[in-house]
Image (cartoon, rainbow, N blue to C red; front, side, top):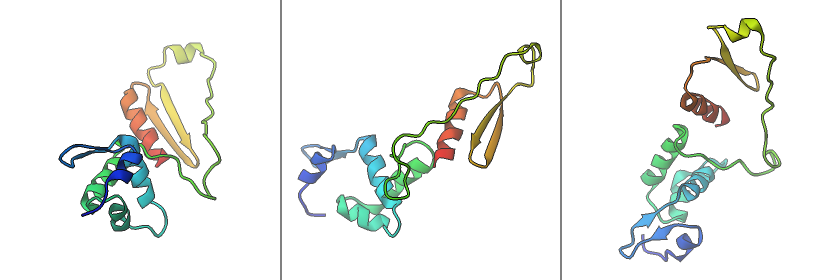
Length: 133
């Protein structure tokens, strides 16, 4: 793979004296997002960034597992700007105060997920990330 790495430093990649590269997560996420565009292949994106396709496939796996957060989609079908989820807070009643069966509901479109109130925050975050993908 013989080419100039100047363009890589322009996008935020740190290229060491021996040619080793450190890819910031934001750059990885942008590159992975490019592979998700219709008609685009992993091989052509890897060539564009002078990297091996299997390296890029590893980043795609990280994104699927929620370890790499991708930027919002762009294009005509993408939502314009940030989106916020409405939050509904119900009045606390006597029954709710002592309820051992309290649940947390996550609603995303037609999907409703009910979780036990004791569900760890990290697990809730994983589920929300997966719903966003």
